[in-house]
Image (cartoon, rainbow over the protein chains, first blue to last red):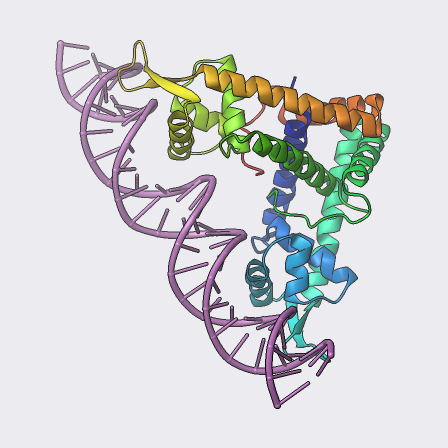
Length: 149
Length: 149
DNA sequence: CCAAAGTAGTCAACCAAGTTGTCTAACCTT
DNA sequence: AAGGTTAGACAACTTGGTTGACTACTTTGG
């Protein structure tokens, strides 16, 4: 019998691949999961590059690369920090917010298909079970999302 | 609400980290998930480097690197292919089989802790649900395990 | 039966996405 | 004002993969 983590990885992979395929059909830039996590993060709080690195669980240099790409592609822009002349806030542009909306729809489509395949209730149990496990392991302070990707 | 794949990734990550930590306490070589998948594959069939690459979903060159490491560390050895003079079978050594046994125990410990945290039945549902979804997506021929890692 | 096409494995160059290390300018104590 | 810390940039390096080229062997079809 497969270890559970193998099932997790394969399922993650399967869903991620479908997501990516459909995204590409629309002809968007080659956004990686990390980019998506940045969008999701920026929707909630104003953040600097350092904050983003912390959230992703990577160095600030790695975070800076990601932010640079997003900037070039027009998904985010940098604005001066009001009180700290060293720092810059990274904020979502309209294009960034639109992407996020689109991606969220896509995810819920995929979840819908999953629910159809294995049953609403099973999916709900999976969701709750995993969330409970994560709380069990990490307590309240969930760690960064360190690359699985 | 978090997309399901995020939960999958975080859970995978959490379990993998614990696995890795405990492994390191024992002082084994820095084996990566890919190595484990190779062990698991070799337990079932005799395979060449090309076969392994196919199974992992990477190029034969990448597979060759992994096999080289495992060879250096004494987990596998190469023996001549009986009918094809170009090819070599890669087979597990005793050290390799011992590792696999050890790792399997570790995994089931971790699953046991998970079961304790979220309930036997919930874990069983997760297992079956994910397996069902994978069958739904891929049919009988599961693809390679392409790196999530 | 042999010529052409295909395959296993190796070598080498390259690439992507991270790392560490260093530096400057600004900030925060005291 | 001085000394330690921090945000961000730049550069060199590491890891784990890639593509491409080549040799030796195998398979296939006329």
